[in-house]
Length: 126
Image (cartoon, rainbow, N blue to C red; front, side, top):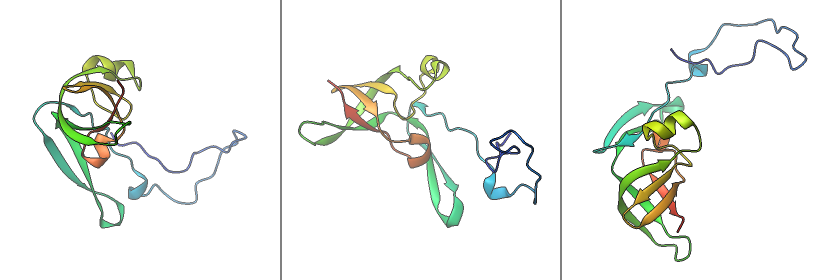
């Protein structure tokens, strides 16, 4: 079920706000994209203004950047170590921004939003 992301029905003082119009379609949210490990799978979704968002449903590679040298390379993701965003996402191995992943070249923290940008970018931690 979509989430409505418009104005609150209450004022900050907790008084009730009278609605002057109905909900609009552009205020409707969408289901969260839960990126898992696996063969690359993308979905193209139309966004506001005719733009497109690429939802990454599954990924097996990440762009790992080394902070000291500034070099980036495409590396294979071995596993999702932890996801501080949510314990449930951590258990299921869902890749979101801030998730710690293990790659061939070491650990990395995901810096991109795979469900909205369509790629997994990570910063090397060790």
